[in-house]
Length: 460
Image (cartoon, rainbow, N blue to C red; front, side, top):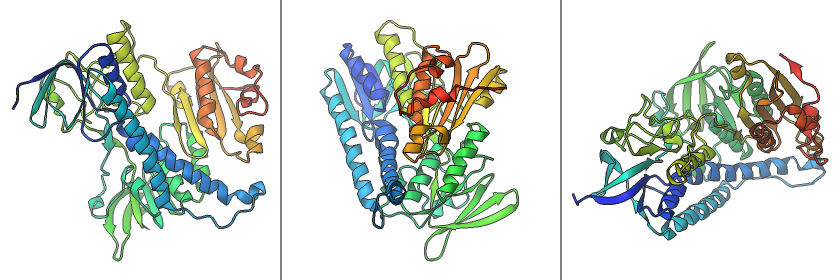
């Protein structure tokens, strides 16, 4: 083993926190090593947001093309060339990845090192016969799809959220195991690509962290799109069928059923990439699921070691990973005192229509004993949605019963994520709901729906 190479900082993983942080550290005059084992950009650019939303866009075009007659537009038969969809997805991912790599390589004082790092001592990592040591180490190693707990699943060639995007033809019948946002996005996407789709969800509702009424509305939309949804259903066994395909044995309240499909997508969670990092050798504590334990300043149990992004558990979103970077930058480079305490966590489920979420759900408000009122309105009451012939969904906002400030929102509707962002801005500015109720928004926009939404509030 060669003598240790001394750096001021080591960043492991070039995701949406690691890449910007490595550049910021180098720009601050710290000799920095950024270690990446596979590709620049992390999950978001390579297997997550960028490729999936690119394919979601292709699915929406197919959906609108099939609905052409509803708009008075005459089209011929609509088909989907999944190989071309994949080519477009790959090109966009390649562009984003290579752009990120060029920025890293151009940063003075930053060494981009390819390989898989593991701790061998506190603040010391080894890779490919080299030892690197630094005063500060930052972990942005992310997560990967979890293997489903189904007997025989390894015999049927189950897909995950990465491999399904490499198919060159839509399966005749896709069975999606898991009813979270990853499963739902792929389910609707492949339905639009031409597959018959069945979702198997072990909980009593899809999107188990959402309010029941919102989950029911999402389920209704998916069923309207021709997707079969099995709730309170747990796959226990998988076996290959003679001639191709797979049979799943599913446990339900009514007993066991057999479900046959062409391919299975496992969308039942993710696990952290800490198994080969050996965090214990670096004095870094993990929880029973392997996620790295951090405090509100993202510090681990090991002095001089921080964790950012998905590997620390909690909300697994790109924007949270990037905000983790901003917290570290503020505290270590800008003399700040930033924390994750009371951080608003917005997110959007990119089904069509979208589900934009921010703040408290009604379930959470009840658990906290909050006194609140509810503003609720179907998207079928939104003029712009009707003009676009996109009336599916519902708007639901919780308002503090005393201050009138917005506590949380679920916007299921066309561009629901964008409407949610307007409510987030109001929450950040501590605006009471009537500021939006009485605001003059341009007509006809989706934004002006907030006027009518807040015109009448339900008491709880």
